[in-house]
Each structure stands twice: as C-alpha cells, then as structure tokens.
Length: 246
Image (cartoon, rainbow, N blue to C red):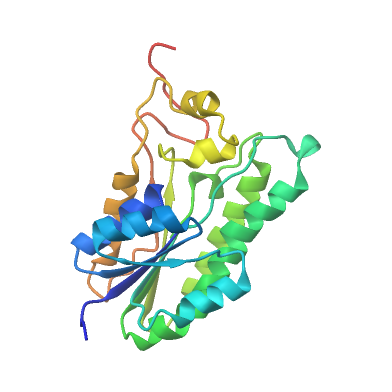
C-alpha cells in the first residue's frame, strides 16, 4: 500500500484543476481527480498517473459515491466552480444565479463535508479552496458570481475557525484573470467574446495557479497559509486592467 499522501482535486478535467492534478503528482502526491466530463477526466488522469472518478459536486449522491471510493485524503483542492452570464441585477437570470451558488458554494461544502473525516484522520490534512478576486471586489454584471464567491470565501474562513485544534489546514487562493475555459463557459461558448476578456494583456495561466497550490500544499505541517490573492501584473482589481494597443 502506498504511503504517499493523497490529493483530491475537483473540477479536474481542464484548466486549473487539470494543471493542479499534474503539479501535485509531480510533487509526490497520489492524485484522485473528480469532474463531470468522464472522457476528458480520464485523459488528464492518464497524463499524471492519477485516478479518475466522475463527480458532480451539485449532486449529493454523486458526492457520496465519490467519497466512498476515496480511501485516504490528505489534501482536498476545491476547484470546481465557475461563472455564468454577465447580466445586471435588474435583468438577472436567477436560474443561473442558483446554478452558480450550487456549484461554487454548496458544491464546496458537499465535498468538504464528505471528506473531512478522512482529512482529520490523515493527521495532517489540508483544504485548499480556489476562490476569486470576485470574492473581494464586486463589479457591475458580476452580481451572481460575486455573491457566490463571497459566500464561498465566508465558508472557507468559518471552516478555518471551526477546525482550530484539529490537524487540518485551510487556505483560500483568490486568482484574478486566468486564461482557461472560464470565460468560454461564462459566455456560453462565444469564443470571440471570451477571447476579448484577455485582449491586450497577459493573464495568469492555469499552471501559475497550480504552482501556487503546490507551494501551499507542501509547506511544513505547522504553517497555514490562510489566504493568497494572485493577480497578473496587468491587473490591479476586478475591473482594473492595463491593455496594450487598445
């Protein structure tokens, strides 16, 4: 039986989740990858020597089945999430708001709750939550995503307080603009609109965030990195972006 620590990464079929799974595997973790897209998940797992288990964090039965298949958990990377739409509150599609809250907030709670006993039993567990600058800086059109990420950040901080005295660390990593499928999903596959988000500036990459996750995860057991905000040099706020040749 392997004595290597086990890292569980949600939303691991692409973007930050896929990059994190690969980086953590290189850092010495056995990696369990969870996401909805089975084919893509299997590809990423094969690339990093990890184990793929289909997971929908918005479905209680899926989370329960997933957790039952994870025998050991030393690190949980709550990466599953995302934004949908960019409408004003006056024109808000509340179904999209509900979906964002379910995946970003309740999804994080579901999988954390399910794996917390194993994280505690590991004797040196850690929960890393991938948040967003949107958790700290509201912006027009971002109401639903802002609300979800503010809530996710609050849950993360409460978890840190409630686990005081337990052998589990908790970290919130809040990126600014990262070029992944994030904007493509937000704009329902509109590639031109998604590409325009990063026009004229140099965004972060999924690998940048994966490297940060790995650094946090490999600190000594007595070191808790509570929160990190990581931004491109070209960005100083949720909507403060320097664009060249614009």
